[in-house]
Length: 371
Ligand SMILES: Cc1ncc(COP(=O)(O)O)c(C=O)c1O
Image 1 (cartoon, helix red, strand yellow):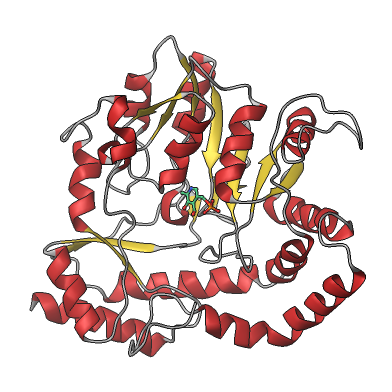
Image 2 (cartoon, rainbow, N blue to C red):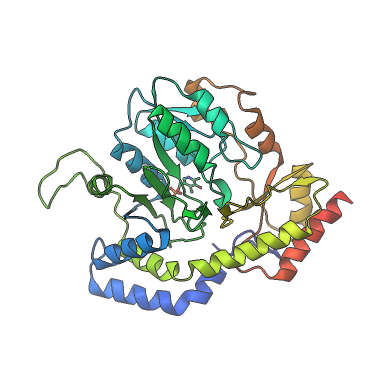
């Protein structure tokens, strides 16, 4: 994605990423394309092994996208028609879509000030039909997993982590995506670990679940010729696996630069008109996004754009207010926290190619708006 025309500080800058990695990526593309095996092959296993090590997980299965990771994770846990899955209404659409696409019913629970799902609201939403909880580690900040796992245990329901935005994050020292029955990740180009296209993966501590997901990503084939269940195709391309293995080696550096940028924002942005969720002692946040909750958000966004600063809103329409969710029967006012945040959230540029002077300029421009 090219930097936005005329933007002094673009929200993303993938061209800068490619410029930095050009030599390594061109060499591995030449190698993979030259060998003529473009689906499967050792690159897939090498990537999965590197993921297991990095994410401190027993099993990792590479799939076609983060959305597919969620769908296959749910299917591998036999969640489907008649089941309810509790999830927040302020995520990317994929979390809820995956639940609906396996035939289950999405049930929303409101969120905390930090935008992550509220464990008390989760507990209140449990019914006899609840089969699973799907917390989302929004922005790279792990949800309150102690409380969520406790609820899941007491009510004997599964946990599917939507860890799409949180590779490398920790909570109580443990890696994101290793708390639940499955942890589902995206490696979309805009994620901290990004492919050159769509990509995702699932972590699990259960060998049988991993085996099932391997089958579900490959037409339900148990071996070359025998199909044991109906399934589609969601294999991650050989080339994307090779690119991701290469980029995984640089991920800690990417995260370090994002954490530095976040710490600077924390220090420099005047909080009288802006809320920034404070860091918790128990966490290691990787800042996929840096979201502030601001008074007069739309005017602030325009003020920043007029001064060459790109921002984004993740996400402008809560999922229970989407046309696709109409049949679930929710309405305005059902999730007051999430709905109030929608009016105030603004994602600031946080990527690894920003300098200290860039962050100072963004912070000063925000502070100037309220002066
Ligand atoms: C929270 C969340 N869940 C799921 C997804 C879906 O991932 P993908 O776009 O790779 O399908 C994304 C990312 O796009 C996401 O941010």
